Image 1 (tube, rainbow, N blue to C red):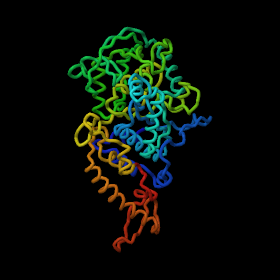
Image 2: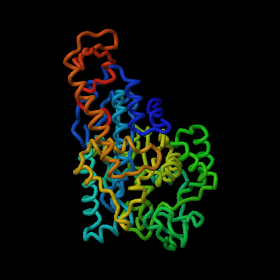
Image 3: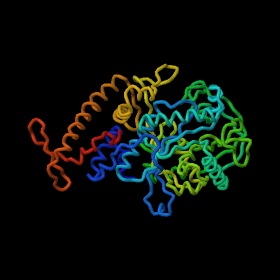
Image 4: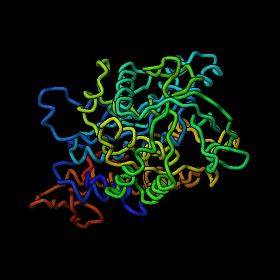
Length: 462
């Protein structure tokens, strides 16, 4: 974790810059060659062993993206998060760590049912189509995940039910009437003091609707002091530091219990002790990080999933869902007697030509289109290099083309050309420094070969 945290905490640095610096500083020469072989994109062979010797194995590095909401096909924001997570996973593998890279789709809730109806499909068919589109995009982008969890998987529902029962046994779930302003897009009730003009959601800028429901609630307020203690004891729990300040502000302002069921939503996991209601999507989806640790087709068992690698080493998310991961989630885990994750990193938003992207503005950026036009390596390289990790980043096509041509094609491309040439002319070695004499402008060239040997392939991080 120390190396991983140093990597994540690199100030004023793009993800690629921080990773390159650490990779070359940390790796022994012998670690480079086997780690850099090209792998087939998409799902990798499962990293978790269920053998008797698994208990004595080193703890895995468990890395997660959000479980993406399937109300619509994947967009560039989802792709950016997953590209960044994939780069971190590759770096951790270079350090010879056992990595479990988890991604997946969040498939329950009112918005899903509405989107399915609009598309002329039933909710499950709609989820199947959109979830498949995520898998196809990850393959196109050379994403090498280990686990892909869907919240409609049977094993996930079993884990959610068991988790709910644990929290109920802790005395942290109660039933009450609630009346408030509800954002359908966020699928949550909003506090009036955080709303924009005309009672609009500050994220979606659409008016919230007044609702009154008889729901089940989670006693979040009970965990205010424990969350304050967590952040005081481990300020690296939320990164970067300005996101930590946001979370501390939310907690200090006073935490309110939140509704964890919906009486008006049919498409979801039924509440175990009241099947007339369904479990709130965030109380459901966050458990996907744990249920994903089970093998496909395996019987649902919360404890068995935990034993396979929990807690997570890192949740990589967009800043818009920071509250759920840095406030709600650790409190839920504390209630169930489960360890909290090691760290939550909230990255920024992407803009296009300096403007917020949106269908209404007609300036959306489609990741599939970018890959088809420029290739996966170009797309990955641009966003890893150009976006300051943790802050907002901007895309412009002119800048994209210039960066790819100047850096990826010219600088790195020429370097690799020389490396391939130098590989054939190593005359002798001494200790960890390799001397190569190359026929370049009639001069002999001396360099640290370990720093440049990438196995004739550009797959270190991009």
